[in-house]
Length: 218
Length: 206
Image (cartoon, rainbow over all chains, first blue to last red; front, side, top):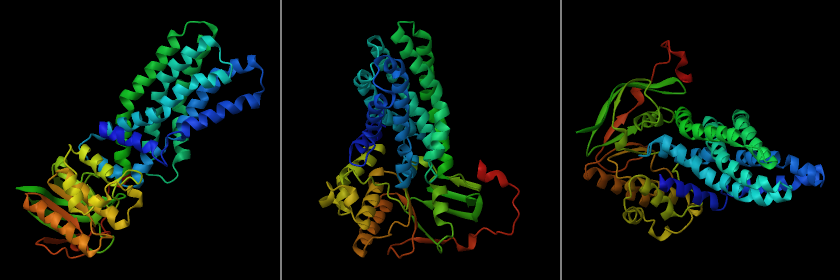
């Protein structure tokens, strides 16, 4: 499984891989927002948590369909299914690799971009914490969507429609934590809810994804 | 000892049975060659044997941990080098040495080349070299000789020979004569009859 993780990460960094796609999108979106809504610091700092979270979510969505589609097209998925690794493990490892190459760079870039949006200084800590806790859920929920649509040509639209509603709780709680953190309020409850969603997704969805892939390969 | 045995097997594609009443078994040291025209269901049968799809009816007795499957697509990543591709599969299957497989399929000189720059035949040789590093006794191969030249076909045939001599077995769907002792199994007579009404319409949705 470590092999598979390394392979996926290596592939993402090689030419044509997905690394940088999500990060670049996130960067562009966040730098464009001040041009769109105007440079007033008060307004920007009010919308910053929401913009950063929506940006992270869309950036994640952008690279989701690559998780399984590429392996499906070149036949690797057939071979991985017959390999000694359980398919649930394959799915979990691929979701983890997606998080490392997409989610983690967003977490690292978020503070710098928060600066562009006049994010309250008290909120930086919570921005990083919520992204760190929330983005794994985005990758694991997304891998389920990708698994459901793996056999379809151009399944990206359907996948977005399936996945986006499932992303909403993570988005709500994530942005809420940052907003409360910026105002100096208690953040325990939404943070616990978000952590619960992530743990649930990580624990349960690999089984659902593996079942979806088995059906797609028949 | 029989590694694969099949009893009264019906295999289906897209919910429609394509072959029915299949009966055969493959023991260690044997090669079974499947023959039949295009579209006769050889691939479907092989996918069923490899455990990628459940049988429509009947029994396949095979330990899924003994099967190494090779399909039309080689599962080769274009941006990884030949050695990296092979080392990945070797690692997945428990860390066999790749040097012997590279040497056997004449890929040693290409080992650091990105697989995306290989020709179709070279890519296929890499896909077949993967079988040697799996260390699994049953090879289930779907048209392994496509896009191979005569010399490479001979390399492949000798790999299969060495494999069965070491106690392995192989089920191969192919149209060409590989030039070794084999048992030929023609799937033609087992074509599923279309005029039978089957009362299990929801099969395709499960």
